[in-house]
Image (cartoon, rainbow, N blue to C red; front, side, top):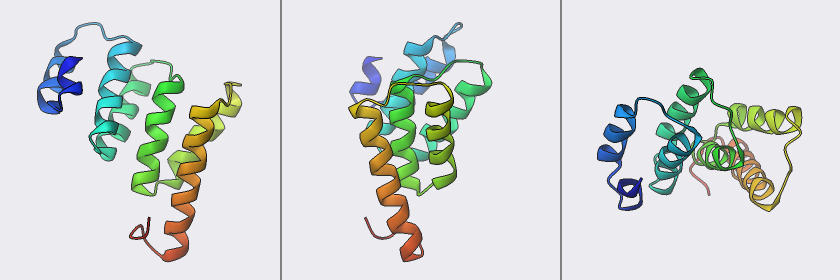
Length: 119
């Protein structure tokens, strides 16, 4: 999805919505685009749609979702992702491991400070 790479998220989402049979590549392209542009709430929302549509999440999906959890301070979803990784016996490689560390690092700081104003 070239529109995502160019920062045209509105147009990219329109094209995404018009795809009659989405696959993991189209889902992950849109989710990744939202992540790169700092649209954490959209990442979480589209992730929920992806799950409801019955698509399996892969490493790329989970890294993006963990980044959104970090940005939103969403410890609950972050823990769900970690449990999913353990349950599915996914390999904890450097990308996924770093995303988990980053998410827990920021969310714990936010919780201890009473909000997510401190990064």
